[in-house]
Amino acid sequence: MLKRFAILALLTVLLGATAAQAQDDCANRGTLDKQYCDADKNLVADAPKAGKCQDPGTLVFTYAPVEDPAVYKDLFADFQEYLSKATGKKVVYYSVQSNAAEVEAMRSGRLHIAGFSTGPTCFAVNLAGYVPIAVKGYEKEFQGYNLIMVVKKDSPYQKLEDLKGKKIAHTSASSNSGNMAPRALFPKLGLVPDKDYTVVYSGKHDQSVLGVVHGDYDAAPVASDVYDRMVKAGRVDKDALRIIYRSATFPTSSFGYWSQLCPDLAKKIQDAFNSYRFTEAMKKNFDGADRFYPVTYQKDWAVIREINDAEGVTYTEEGMRKEEEKEAAAKKK
Image (cartoon, rainbow, N blue to C red; front, side, top):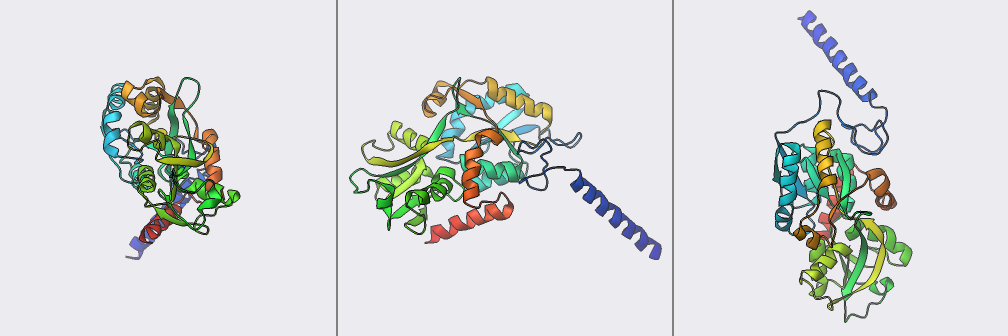
């Protein structure tokens, strides 16, 4: 019996040493979750070591839950077919109802290719091992968007400071233009969220816009591209609202893949994004963008990380939970 316990103790020590060695094998992790490594210091997870990569029989794809998910399932059908031919695998669409759910789906390995909204891209990179490789764009540049503050056209509000004491709809806690950017940028312009005005969370950009139109909110910070699409689609009368603030340009939703996919599969996915050209329906819906324009998280998300740093955001499970808790608490008000 003593010999058996001695063997078990030795195995425990050896396993502990192996785990410690595995941790030491990562020369640099940065802000990535402990299951990922960033040896080349490009801020995204490295590909897994030989024999550890994932090669799923069916690839799962989704787009950020910015508006009605069903619309995008149909819109990306042609691209899914293109991905299928490029990878030799079946590609299915998985509808998600929240940014957190999308991050968790990739973190758990149930989601392999995705489009993440600008703000949640940072959480996806650090928590889920997501590798952004593209945004919607044109031949020479990517498509950007602005944070805009919309108010009813017949309202008396002309500048941000006029909104003190009012009820303003943010979208969701992890949204860049719908929450993080306003909290980082507005204080410098004389308007502090939660202090100078009451923040309520609508859940989505289109719901914020429609809430202002219907008088539920006095104003709303939203993504300009979502607002422009709503106007073009006739969901909002262009004369119903006014824009009283417009920020500098941010990148739109990112597209990319799960870092744990086998390198040869990841390359096929990246090549597909680079060579695909949008259908007429996609061009119409995405404001004339005709392709996926290549980007890197390190360079093109620098301004977003700066905003997050100003907000004290941490890309951890606890950090994500705090953002969700803030949103849930705000919805109860």
